[in-house]
Length: 149
Image (tube, rainbow, N blue to C red):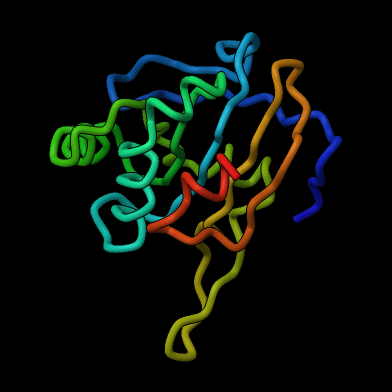
C-alpha cells in the first residue's frame, strides 16, 4: 500500500446498494470511515460490519460517516444490509477500481493458490479529504473500538 496518513484520499465514484453513485465529495463535511472488506456475509466481514453497526451512534457522535466497500454487487449488498440491519451504505466495487486506487486490491494466497482480493483495511478520512489514519490490522469483532480509541 502506497497511501499513508497525510495523503489526499483518492477520489472515488461507485454505486451503493441501491445503485446510487456515491463519491468522496458526498462526505466532504464529515469524517469518513472507508472500510474495505472481502465479501458480504462471511464470518469476519459480518463481525466487522456488526461491530460498526453496534457502535454506529458513538461513531456518529464523533462526526463519522461509515461506508463499506467490497467487490460484491448491489443485490448482495442489499441482502447483507437487510440481514444484519446495517445503518450505513456499502459500495459495489465490482470492477475493483476503488480498491485498486486505495492500494488494497492485492495478490493473496490460500492453500498455495494465488489470487487477487481485498486486503481488509480501513481508511479514516478527515473533512478536508485527507487520510488521517489507516488501520491495516483490523480486529473484526472490535473494529469500532479501533476507530473510537
